[in-house]
Length: 185
Image (tube, rainbow, N blue to C red; front, top):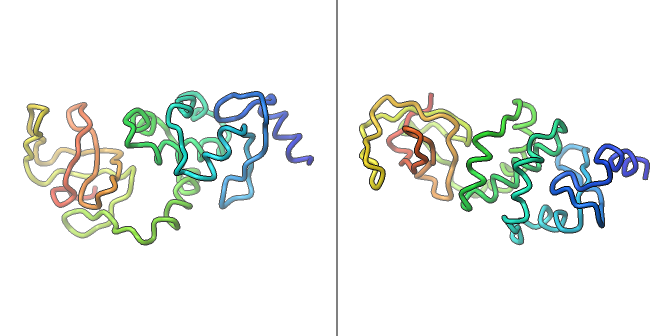
């Protein structure tokens, strides 16, 4: 109970994700032994990603800037799970995590996704979200009206559900690129 009291004091008796002040509980941020204060709306969604309501988590544009690493980890995980919505990708692009915190944030997803096929570049090197890659061939970007030139560096890539594709920004536009035309930097 002492832990809960300390957490409630740290959070000013508010959910550290959405700011709700009612029905608060603590949530363990695996695999570390660290906790955050969450409400009864956030907690079930954190425990079961299949029921995530992306509109509820628009609050992450504020909570992701917390100085508490456990809150940063939860924000990163939620934004990563909701990438297909569009707006979470932009927040992920802005979110900075130090190396230790990013490793913690990605630690669970690595164990959960062991059965998935890894995304590899043209040389067979495994790509991860956040990596930088170089385009190895001029690529016409359909619908955007420009060509992604050979040698262009794409920073902070995002993996997709398809292991043959990644997403990244080229000329300020977020596009999908085939991994076979990329080389990890």
